[in-house]
Image 1 (cartoon, one colour):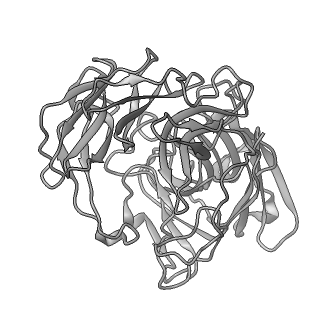
Image 2 (cartoon, helix red, strand yellow):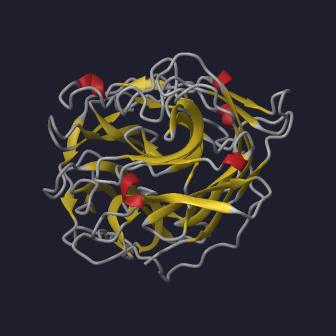
Length: 454
């Protein structure tokens, strides 16, 4: 865990811990965190053949770049003396280490070059767990740097064998192309075949949108676990007796009473109680103890449709509820119903649609347009549609009506930043005013409509 409000040189910036489970498919089986001392991040455990356990991590590179390792007691978090085992091949920020033992060799594989367009994976090996490690002459063993590939920023990889004995690599990558402008889903996990001959270094297949290699096993959805598969659509009606789906995500710690499924006054809806803070929060980073009323699900398709019913009648100026493409508090697109002074008669407050963007790149001013008179005090349906890789469309209409109004568009570049990828969700806020209100969301739908891979 990284406390990113702390200076890079403050050793309290990093907090590393271990959680354990005998059944990872059971959410209730996980242990409490066991903390251990390490000045850095990307820590990874390794179980040696003699029963010893080691933790390998990325020392904070702003203090001293390198990969450090120590024996660890996983039950207590006690560590032995850390040893610097490898510093990589000279690229920026050696990090994301993993140790493997194969054919009497220890291999350490790491990411270098930073997590942007120069991201790459390198590897070295030794006969001893603590080195010295000798680099693969073919390094980097995986990268799309300095190419025109659609999948860029490839790195932070790992290796595993399937049940048939075939080797695979998994890595992080952005679907951005070298322009590195439109990648709202952030760093995604990609899979690529690997050949790892005896006593040799592994050889990765370069990551691309269409590959050939080892056969996939047949699809099997009869697996243990909770929640939907990642590519499953949403058709959520919030029936009585249900709770928030497990794949729903809050930003920061939620105020749980602000989210009530199927309240008595409006069954089969999600009741949102507004927060004083809007999507920007305090400072573009924190929501504080009073929380921020927002809940969403991840965008997992390049092309999709997302829509909800919104039952909301604002009663005070700047009361607002709506939908958002949300990356962070400083990178989001919001589309809601808000009560504002009538542009034709400032003494009257009427509901408006407001579509705006909070981001670090130049964007158009917010669009503010009156809700049609016939739609006021009615349940509306709000839509977000991604019909291409560069823009989102925001529209609204009456529930059960084929008539919709496109209010405007948002750039996916505005929410292409950092690592985590966008959420699609709902919010309710007084925009800084005291007091609170309720808004009701129903018939939450998400459907993927295609993946762009090249």
